[in-house]
Image (tube, rainbow, N blue to C red; front, side):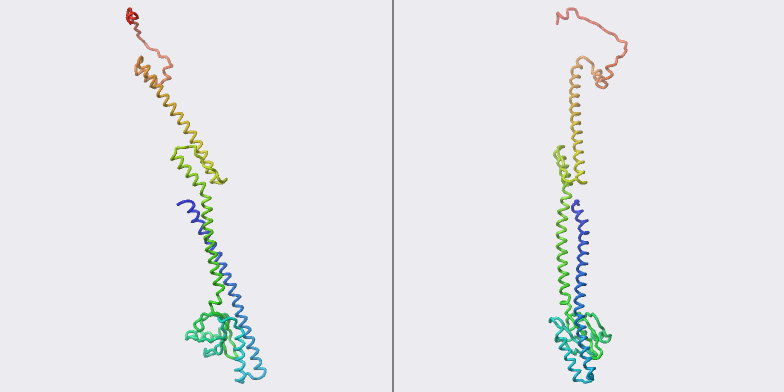
Length: 312
């Protein structure tokens, strides 16, 4: 595996982890912030509805009309009308249920399913208030609920779950797109930077291959950066200089050896005509010994052929 690939495999997971963690935290923070704002908005509507109902009920009580069915019915109708004014979109729904899980009023038509009625019955029995998430009319909803004792109602101020989290979903998708784009850009930049970082090393490898292939010790690596890789290239060049010097010395020694061998051959050819071979071998085996005298008992024979010069 190349160094560039190793750099990418090491750095990319770290970079991706940091981006993913940052993006996830940002998305969750945005989701939490938007959810809190939306919850407060629905909670505010629920509080306004409760205040209006309290005012209407107090009017009935102060006028001793709380036991009059006609006025109570008118008050409930007024509450339903006021609930209509709280609705700002077709996805919002304000409704109330009684102890029989029947819808007493609703800002839009709603038909509760059996399973939904069982859930609402449990909520009614437990007088569940505050933030809730449930299904109504086959639609997932979120909202705020409160129980009103005088009417024995459980009132809901709700919004469709998909609409409620629409902005959050958009932010999450945008965060995912930004995260993916950041990863792509990071990978591209990482490839570029790793290529720039490993290029001097690749140059050293290419130069070494050229030297091996061409047997040319004059090749040198360019020092691009003043760092560890630059020191490597500079040291490599010094090593090649020393190898080139050593190679030249070896060539000179080889030339001298060849010349000496040729000279030896010439000397042998000349002296073998007058000197025995063992004497010549002894001389070349130990030339210094020939410079030292040696005492021996010798017999010298002088001979002459009469009139040899004339005969010759």
